[in-house]
Image 1 (cartoon, protein in one colour):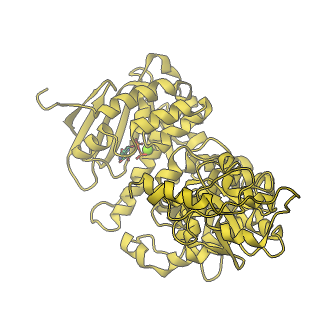
Image 2: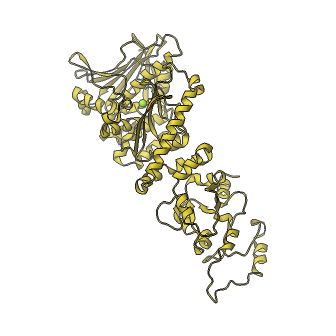
Image 3: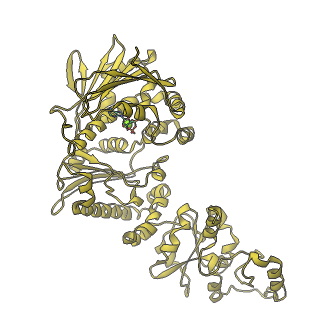
Length: 542
Ligand code: ADP
Ligand code: MG
């Protein structure tokens, strides 16, 4: 008709659809998890918006409704949530607001097949997964607070249409025209199984229409509110997979209830493996804040950013349900919860650090993130220092500052580090020859953040942390044993000649005892940026 508008998808969406539909074929069932999650999010968002905007209140009997029509070959997911305006339909379903396709497709190519499904959630492409099972998708939505409804429709082939529609109440209906090879998703048994598997703890009930009857198929258990004894390992793992869009098992599960002056329940997880993008992309902790079971926000910064890999839920009695964003910023309750939750996570990490082997799994995944706290979070520096692990010139595997200190030579005053891009190259570097020859251990730092923190966190246990590129003088106290006939040559003629030849490229040429096998070495001045920092500054064009 006249009123139907045609729009082309953003170029990225076209490519993305292709990827999602083809690369994830064997995991098609997760489209339903994504649609139910979106519906539940929409309900949560309406509830939250209703606190500050008049007329948005949810109807009394809120649920997400699923129905399958085998004759029409449609599967419909309806919610009474916040809904979308015409512009929001175009923006949210016609473009990729968040991460780019390129990053997505690269990660998809790198991922093992069983890791792929988790990518969908992480990249915020959940809605498009509907096209894995549908050859046409219609979204009819009415924004809460508006009388207008619109239908967005697409065959997932480069364009979508927008047309005026009617809907009695605010909310959204997603109608999937199920593909010929996807009959299974019209079967009530199969639908119930999938929803139970992925969305059982969602607090909004999910119903399925079966033979005219509507039946609630989720239990809506707020898992974190139960006592530990009531929760099985499997239930924890499922919930973990839901909150972190992951497919592995958690490395640590922290479930506790604080009682007394501060009341809250918390269920937090440290993931079992590093997610593909999330930790680098996200800057803030996304731990979800609930008040008396109801989801409030995942932007309350419940943990410091250097613990942002921790996923989960904190649910408190101590805030009103109608807490506004402004109030969240200001309330001392949140600051106290934050402190308690942070202390708990640190305590857990410290205790798990005693088992070197399992701690290594954690460290290899999240160590670099943790290190950011050394310069960002003065209050927790000492806690973080105790959790650090390093490669070393003296021992295999991972070692800690405390272990290093216990191995220091008599008379050794500083902790020596060498920063670079690659541990193997550092271990073979001429920079540490003199240290090795004198039996002095050097910590080898090859993470990107290692260029930054030693400037700010420069002592451990009273011992200065020094870059070997700046510490040539320190070695004079530890002369290596010199075999007879191996006395140092007289270099007094050579040194000035070298300086003359190098000119302004170096500030000084010095005779040194720190080399054993190599003839010359580039060193940094004792104060100011060390060599790796100088390199990074040059790369950044400064
Ligand atoms: P994500 O949920 O990770 O943001 P999706 O691809 O699943 O990504 O959804 C894209 C956006 O479309 C959502 O952020 C939301 O704004 C909007 N959306 C999807 N489904 C609904 C719905 N049922 N009600 C309201 N908005 C929705
Ligand atoms: Mg989604």
